[in-house]
Amino acid sequence: MFQPLHRADAPQRIAGTVELQGATLTEREGELLAYLLARPGAVLTRGELFDALWAPHGGATENVVDVYLGYLRRKLGNFEEYGLALRTLRGRGFQLAAKETE
Image (cartoon, rainbow, N blue to C red; front, side):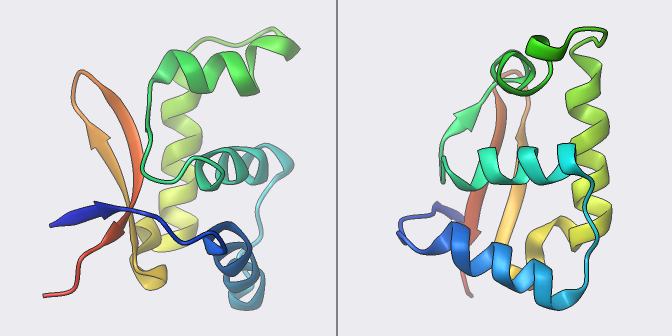
């Protein structure tokens, strides 16, 4: 069903496509998207995402990760338009993966 991303140009290709589609991302949404795109296929825990993007700024809890992933899914249609899927792996974390064609 899903496969990890292996294309070296995936981050630039998707970021350019998002820009062309006119999706307006906040700075933090952009940082989260960049973090996910820089680690294609990796399973990232909520704690890892929080520590990398929110902990240095303080004043938030790990729940903020779920909120911002929801924002990205709404704005980018869960990445389906880009041939990707943002998966929630229950008990493990999150993964941005290429969607297999049927």
